[in-house]
Length: 495
Image 1: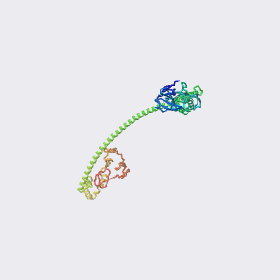
Image 2: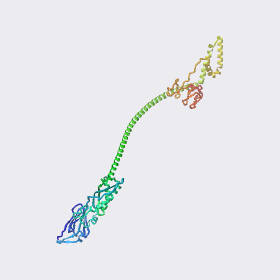
Image 3: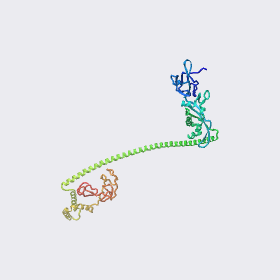
Image 4: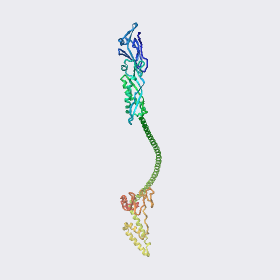
């Protein structure tokens, strides 16, 4: 029988295959080995792995690879030979969309109501080779290869059949626990399939890793619920009532929020309106205050002008009084220089008046001419003799004579009121000073104005308000000055 010898070693078959054993076991020396990017090639000799090749193109001869020298050789014509070995190709691509499912239902106790339910699960997963050497040594053995679901076409190993019990057991053992642990509602389980998938995928992947396989993605696509179960229908009805209650509460909350929002909007509008009114009121108040300040300013301006005018007039009066006082002092000084004072002048005036009265004695007396002349002469002599001794008392005698029956009865002029501020004379019953504008208090017959404090007080020696002396004193000689007097009766000094 002719020996079949292979010159090119490669695998370009179905991509769903995980491991494929090359059908030829004898290869020519210097045969070409082609390993694709997603593959690895394992050379077996005498039941052991003698070499592993990654992606690339290789020429197999004894010069390049020492292990070929030790392989069993078969010589052929032309001095060439062939070597014997087994070659396995491992596909390292990710196998996607591999279906799985539980072989029976899982008992699940609803945690809130304690209702027992029977549920199942199914889905898909992605599978890839993570450790090629472990996969070949633990699963392939001497078979011609392994795939996910095929057991024909020369394949003696199906991963789906091999791992179905493990997948089903892991899912059924952890499905109910995961739903309870994650506090998932069984009626809303479809919304949480990703959570279940991630949790159960961790357990399933651990079972594949022992054989050099990994599960990059694990998906639960369907949870089988007992739609015909009476308990499940009751659970759905309770769920419906709960949802309706939640919806009613939510609507109440929404209506309350809307009412609150409308109330806040209304309050905000009222606040804005109130602020507008307050602003208008404040503006009007500020305008009124400005007008009042303007009025006060004008009044103060007029008062200051009037005060300035009064001060000017008062200063003019003071100046005139000063001139008069200086003139009076000048006259007094002249009189003093001539040897007599104001008392001498007054005494001279009294003597003159007395002399004129004596001269008229004859004309005023009754009786004959002789007796009248003698009496007049006698009176004149007596008067002249007594003139020197009665001169000091002449003033008192004239006062008594004026008050007697010889003079006509006359009333003394009323004392003129003066302003307590500027000293200017005031008209009778005046309420304000014409010079400085000071308010004048009306006085009774026994009242007066204190020159020190300006308060109304009964006439006397001292003020009842401040205790100041009410009688005026001459600043030169200290003699008492009658009320209203402008000159001292003793020394003639102007008050």
